[in-house]
Length: 160
Image (cartoon, rainbow, N blue to C red; front, side, top):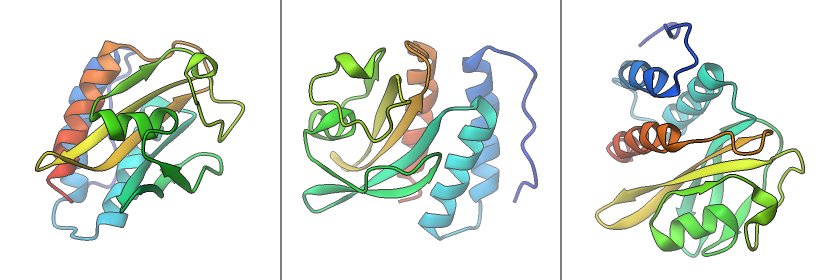
């Protein structure tokens, strides 16, 4: 298990994601507990990028249930198709939202959240969870974040 993250001093997020993924793999290697692994992945993402909020929602029957996260208090349950997270689940597609206030049906868990990216974690064609990342800045996420977070989520699926 890694004791600390070793991340370059760069603002290039794609480079940071590329450096982070193998460290996440080392961090979770040998640990079978999903909660512990998702908690450390959330912490590593927040530590590396300084995101306002980062965490997982786990599919439980017909709802997303709050899982491990880093940040302010969050919504506990989200219905399929509701808000950015529920939309990512129902569409099985990453949602990149520059302005959450302009997203139809956005759930304001925190009024400080301004932009968001949500990536579904898909196992055998079904969404098992979503990774939700929020920023307190408008349009803070780009295609680089989508690529980096999708690569992490593809790997996270192997942990579930």
